[in-house]
Length: 208
Image 1 (cartoon, one colour):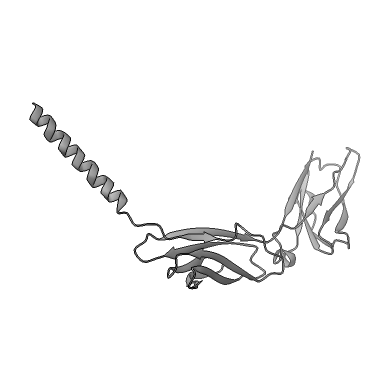
Image 2 (tube, rainbow, N blue to C red):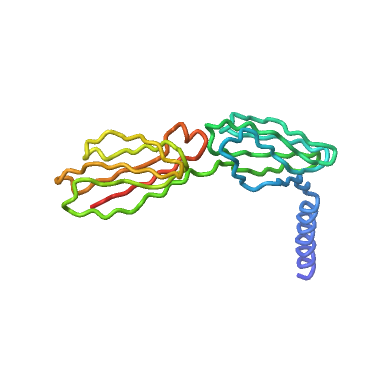
């Protein structure tokens, strides 16, 4: 009985040694560190330089479906510093970048980066509408001199309206509301030409 106990103990101890040896012999992870965390770029910026660090003699590359990049290799210097100039067209308001690093005898490593442009400012003024009102003044504030487009619910049978905010970003427009229309909504958002540079923002009101 004692002999069987000893044999069992030796077998378990041997398994533990093998497992520990496997853990100890597992390759290290390739170093990878980015200098930026989800940056916001200027509305007119088209070049963004990616910076980071990895192991010396490591290989790095990036992927981005938003920028049509597939396994594009990064520059890694003799100190392990990596860099790459990303070309971001003005019509791209945000993009996701995947960065990979691989060093000899080490496990591959990866990280991601989300780059975006600032949102277009849009604040709508509150309104007080009574059952006797047949018109509504829509007003608000956005970026100075931006084009603003308003669209309306089908029940109002109104065409979309395009106007330009003034130098302070203020805009206003009056619409007629028939007595039999007791529930409607409108939305306001920056025109497409400006959404090429800024992330468009919309706001919806519902009046009942």
